[in-house]
Image 1 (cartoon, helix red, strand yellow):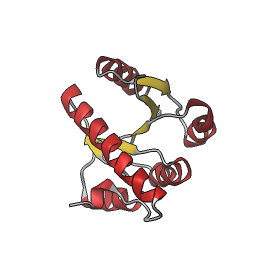
Image 2: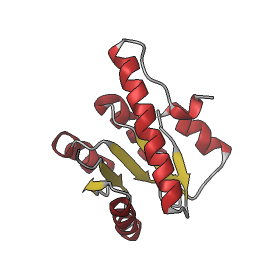
Image 3: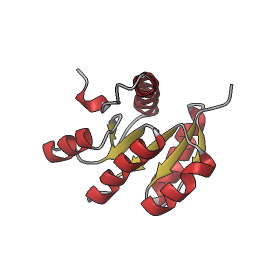
Image 4: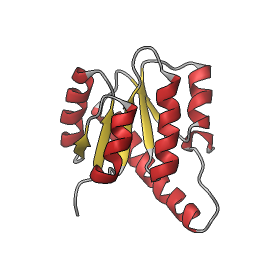
Length: 143
């Protein structure tokens, strides 16, 4: 069985480099590291990631969050956001864009592993719902 492929979207190269090491240590494979949303969307059909990690910069760009929603809906790929923020407006917005979770920076490899596994598991459940015609939901809205 091959390693799950992860695409990391973000402008901060040092974060992408650290994530690449962490992902490798956890048994995941980095399949792409675009710095823009447009580049990520162009890459999707070729790299076919199992999951997308979006590194939300210190100033959260709501266009990036909306793009995450577009990726989730168009490609049915789970998205996890990495952020330094944990405020109510951001959490509310993540619920509306179909996020499968978020991880606050700084984070440990253990917490990264946990959120990746949870997102992939929940995505599997949502894939079953989509195939049955029931639609999917944001992991953040589940109880």
